Image 1 (cartoon, chains in turn green, purple):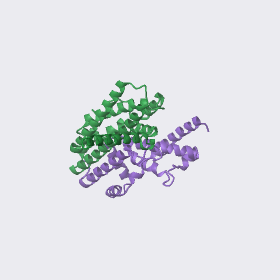
Image 2 (cartoon, one colour; image 1 turned 90 degrees about the horizontal axis):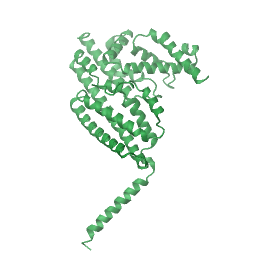
Image 3 (cartoon, each protein chain N blue to C red; image 1 turned 120 degrees about the horizontal axis):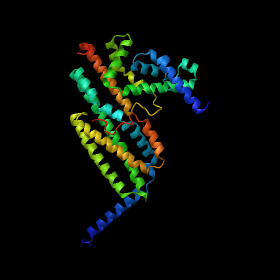
Image 4 (spheres, chains in turn red, yellow; image 1 turned 90 degrees about the vertical axis):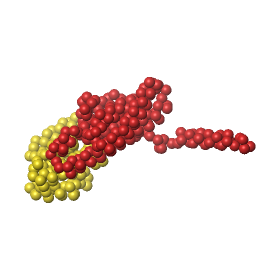
Length: 197
Length: 153
């Protein structure tokens, strides 16, 4: 009996894990991301967080140059603190909305038989790179301020745009006309991809 | 009224607001404050007697809201140097003592109620609104510093 106890314990643990897994998958959709939430995340990203005008404003070197040359150190400190706060808000919100999109994508992908493995791998790699970059960016902004990490901001912006574009293909109702309309309303929507450097 | 006619009316009303009203107000901060003042605090609805008389109350409200959004967007995406200049023009236009106006703006934060309607996509918690509030706070600090040490020192 004592020899079989570890096996029984492992078996019981496996059963518990399976029961938890089954319960988690059987839960109603309220606990997980819905289409409307994913569409909302996409809209917020496209209209607000991935607006080149907004991001260009937060990380504007022109503003920093003005403040550095025209104001006393006290105001310069205030400016850096304000822009640091804005940069961290932008980063946190962008990461949060992209995570919502990815959660929806994961859910939608389970029931989709037409998935392209290459596309999914690309999406997964992009998302992992995006998360890693967000972590690095957050540390850089905390430690050195918003103007130290402009190249990384540029890269995170482009990755987030790519993730939006890849994930919206799985979103019903996001036809080309609809997306075009959203893009036309974006400030600076026709500008080239690189905006900070 | 058909949607097309209504759209043309709103466009004409927007031009009317720009040419007759906003043209007489110097500076975008002053225009923003003015346009916010045409909005009812309780209902959020815009009203302007002259524009409503020439068009209709509904068309006037839509035109004022569109102008408000446009002036706000221009200010949000202006350089900080421009925001400081616009705010300076506004402070001098009030004819009160500049330091007094700046202190009141810093303390009471009236700029929080001059952003366009929250019924649209813009809320006080949105990123453009946060950028605007932040820029105004910095501009106030720049102008206060200038007042205390002399201009552009």
